[in-house]
Length: 347
Image 1 (cartoon, rainbow, N blue to C red):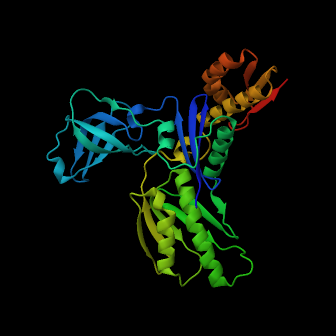
Image 2 (cartoon, one colour):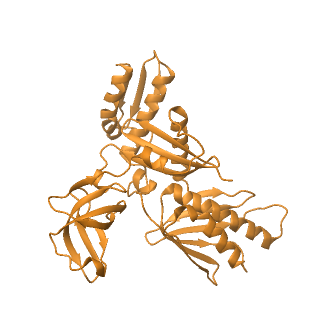
Image 3 (cartoon, rainbow, N blue to C red):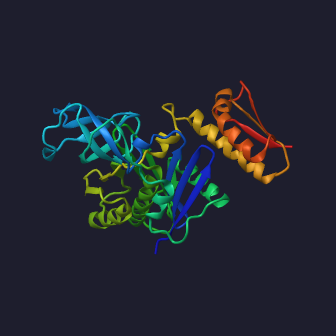
């Protein structure tokens, strides 16, 4: 029986919710100060219809702040008119250069505004069938740090040997299964075992990363047992329903599926277009390190050194920490430091 546990890490400038599956991180949901309530999953928003593109079958709606939302046109909507006010629900958060996905829940009037906020992270965790109460404090901080580190990885070890690599492209999520050295089994059995393990691992990791859309899994070996692998994939991705659709295994040994995109992905949240941690992400890591050091040494002076842009981004959070720990925290800018290379020390 699978066991799911929940963790809620409340930090300076950021709150992170984690769900683990049998001790491994399965979901990581990040919210930051400054996030727009009108773009949050589950929010009900009064939106203004800005543009209708009937050739594409899409409408674009002004939510009041942030990128336009996207609505798939349907015959039951009738004739929508640019400038019309609609009440919508956020069904998928914005990702990259794509706006939020919405569904119409009614008509309204007035300027774009939030009618009903989306659920917070505590409510979100409560909606899952967890094995016990949500854990907070230091254990939650550790769980969130572990989940974040794993979400940024590309290659994942499989039980019994072998690996699965998961990489995002503009068009799809590519998953590659490598048998590696699975001792004590002949090649066909080894490939079958690796594929079954890879489906379970890939499903968990894709939930952790918050990825979706078209997923193509390059299975190991040849002559696959299609019904068994499809059944295993259906079970592995069941927690993502509704919205999972599976195709047959192709003659090239690939399994295709589509998974729903609901929340902003972890990579979109943490990384910039260059594939590196953003200045804001590093600043939040620095603040967590300062907080950890201050808690570990209640009477000591804590000093941090960071790149100038990171120090500037962390400055408001440092003020919040100083209100808790006093004036014993110090942050200096070092123009010679790389973005990710901050240092925290006590005295």
